[in-house]
Image 1 (cartoon, rainbow, N blue to C red):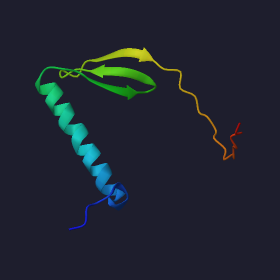
Image 2 (cartoon, rainbow, N blue to C red):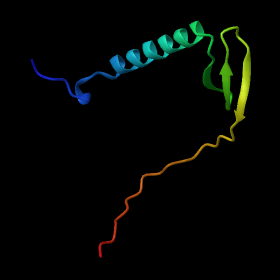
Image 3 (tube, rainbow, N blue to C red):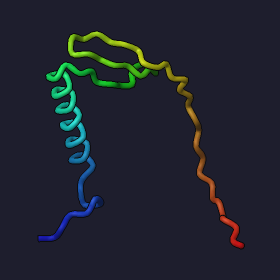
Image 4 (cartoon, rainbow, N blue to C red):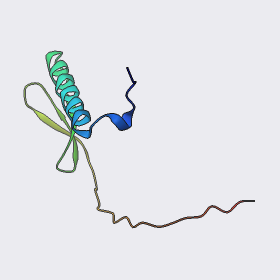
Amino acid sequence: MKKRTPQDIPNKLIQKAAKNSSLRAKRENFALGLPITVLKNGNVVNIYPDGKEKIIKKLDLKTVKVTKKKYTLAGK
C-alpha cells in the first residue's frame, strides 16, 4: 500500500480532523475545570466551563495588503 503524503490528503479531511481535535480538546479542558483560550472580537479571551469569559489581552489587529513581488538575493 502506498504511503500518503501531505499533498495526497484532501483539504476537507484536514479541516474535519482539525475541527474534531479542537472540539475534543475543549471538552477535555472543560471536564478538568480548565478554561480554553480563543480569539474573540480582536481580544484574547479565556472561556471557563461555567461560561464566564475573561479578556486576557486586547489586540490591535490591522489589515495588511500583500502584493506579489520578486526578490533576488545578492551573492558574495
